[in-house]
Length: 182
Image (cartoon, rainbow, N blue to C red):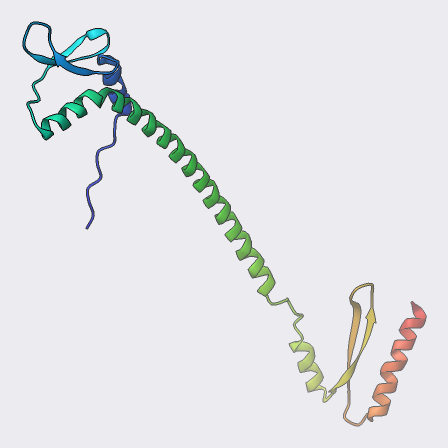
């Protein structure tokens, strides 16, 4: 079950009220000659008349009131420290999220490039013309290699009447002629 979020603290307003209040360590004692008890701040400045009564609850209430000024000082400092730390962590998280998005885009791009099918030449017209002329593709090919890859590859097709030995001899002779001219 969702619990309602508490209203945000107005630390500046709390800080202003704290600064305007009587400072110093507060204490509880009898006012001289009045028979009443009260809370005194620094330099014996009266803060107010309070009668906490007697018993454990009265002691707890008195302890709470007497320590309120110091406790608020410590709490304000700690809340401001935590807000600063939180702002730093949020900035780091946002930076990490931006970096993760960029990395994901890079991975997506690299994956697309790595898995892309290479563009192959369209040979369907050539193959159809060959078949239409009654030619048969020859299993061998003539390849001339460059520095790191082939720079020429020629495939041949022959009529069914050309014997295998003649086919091989023709391809070999074409290769020799090309090499002699280079």
